Image (cartoon, rainbow, N blue to C red; front, side):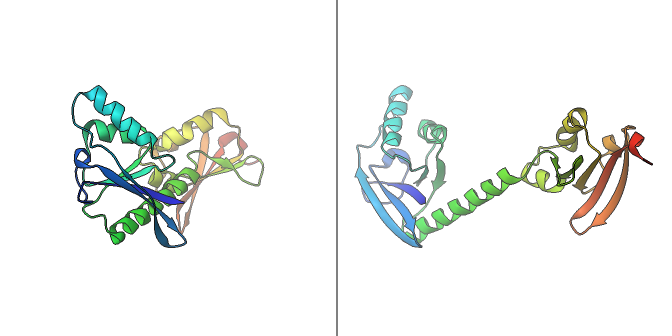
Length: 205
């Protein structure tokens, strides 16, 4: 269920966290935006770091399972506290229905992207044929730009006996071409270049 808490000042307008004295929790149910809770609290004074941290954490505890929060602006200790508590933090200029629905839509898109990213494997997986593996390096690097071909493939080569490994890539990694253990043939496909990797001693039977 999509849910977000929106903090506001005494005029019920978006403001800096330290000016806020109330919040509303909104949920999206069957395309309808519903306000499920409205709470008033004493504004937190930016005093000593320890006191601010304690009061912000008390505020967070009262939000229950809601893990998305919107403010006019938030920084410093309050931002860190919400971030460490696992919140998705948004900054809004307005808290009208359109803005909140836009926030929840953006949240849903983010969650879907995260879900897709978690489904992309960062290592080769065995296909339905024993000893034959497949790895989509292109998609894995799109989801994780810091993933190098060597980081993804080298541990596999060192630890997994295989007959054939098919790797979807934009080009054959130079380090792999230089590895004398393998023979590589390539096939052009609509999705990119498919490298079919076999052991040299396996070739010809």
